[in-house]
Length: 423
Image (tube, rainbow, N blue to C red; front, side):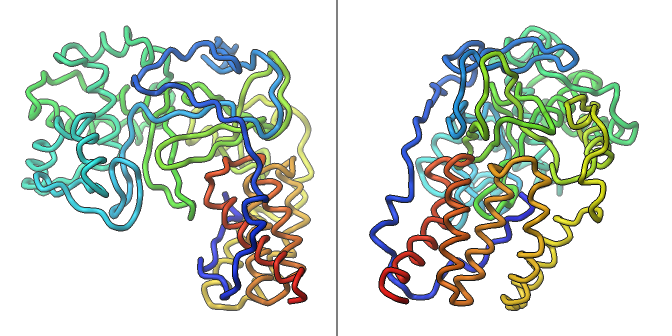
């Protein structure tokens, strides 16, 4: 989210208030059984999968859903770590060790290593080691697609084309391969040659390049970028039900991550029969900008009410005002110019209306930044007021385990404690 530039974690040495825990609300978490990579997804007490005209498949609410309700939480079917220093199993950063065999995968401990070996690494370790000896390091996209292909081929290997067509989950995913730019298809063709080499090193038959290119395109069209508390992309992943959540520039849900798990929460009240949607792009941008990004990255044209209606108020603001403004704030924070950063952040507040709702993670992150800046500038009242706004929004759009929600609650609780004691 564009507004979430985080300040240093260590706050001034004030004791956290006892009211810290009271800032959280208890959300009713509806956790699906993910013991199988492909649990039955088509009907829950909240949604069902249906064909959506012009979109392929989508998820539709089967009852009214309240704002802040957890709609869907699930672990990925496949994932691939994108950054060094993160555990392959749980995506924790820090104290990790490399696999003794291939030296290419990292784990935080024996638990994640054993689970990772059983799930994927037993098939990959020798291949990754051989490629490393040849001076080749598989990219996250290649690893993700390799794992998807292994699922489609099944335990004994076989015909990938048949696997993609007949698999209960994979057969329903859109690839957009034919509508992709030629340069991207050429890139997938080159990656498919390397993917075939990985398959043969596993003792599996090579596959037609066209079919492998389709697998790469499926991953691109349906994968999510997993982000950590600092909003750094730590992995790419495909989710069984999450893959069916379509885009809207007027979404009714937001997505957040806890480790590898994804959680979709209702950002407003959702009526029975309404399609469940999130935004794939920055909402605080013009119709032209959104359309271009959706076409270039996702190969479709949005027909939601914002895109099919007249040009919006956003077109009257400077292009990328929020993105460029946030970049300035980040630079000032890095330089320690907290007062100037706060002034710039406050100047961005009127533009938050461009998100179309106050219950948006970027809006919450903006108020979290303001709370942190005021806290460092010893404006206790201002930190408390901005923190309360951030906590209220995070309660709706994030789960109680969210690090951002915890940070906002800590600052708010500290500020409240100082106010109560005349600080």
